Amino acid sequence: MRWWDIEPVMVLEHRLFPEDAWSRGMYWSELAEAFPGGSRHYVVAVDPDGTVVGYAGLMAVGPDGDVQTIAVDADHQGAGLGALLLAELTAESVRRGCAELLLEVRVDNLRAQRLYERFGFEPVGVRRGYYQPANVDALVMRLDHLAADETAATDASDASDLKDHHHG
Image 1 (cartoon, helix red, strand yellow):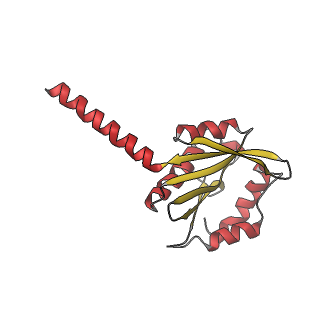
Image 2: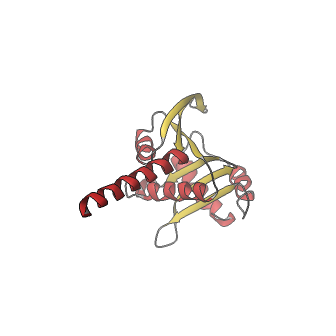
Image 3: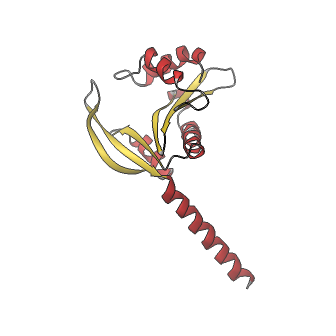
């Protein structure tokens, strides 16, 4: 995401989050930290004609990563774009050495929760009244990269054990 993406992002932001949309100033502040070595990483997804149809942002400070935002235009939902954006943020958090990745999601957004669960996020708490002015609670979810690494290593070990058994 670059400064010239802020206006099309704002159109989507107000359409998707009418009650608690971020301001232009918030996006300008986030992008001010999105430089090599900065604490932010923001991306946009565009359709073939160049229209912004999704966006996502990560904050990474030391071992802590946080999904700041992730959004997909309603006309493009259900096609895997949210998963692509989340995969980008997850990969970037690993590249930056984060031990964990946190996010907040509305308790009533079950579709997003299912996406996060597919990526290995687990519920760890609730923030009461997090989304204002609607006063909707946020479910806090966490992806433990270290546990994911151990699981991947165990899976690889199990796979090599299987291979050995097949050839033995």
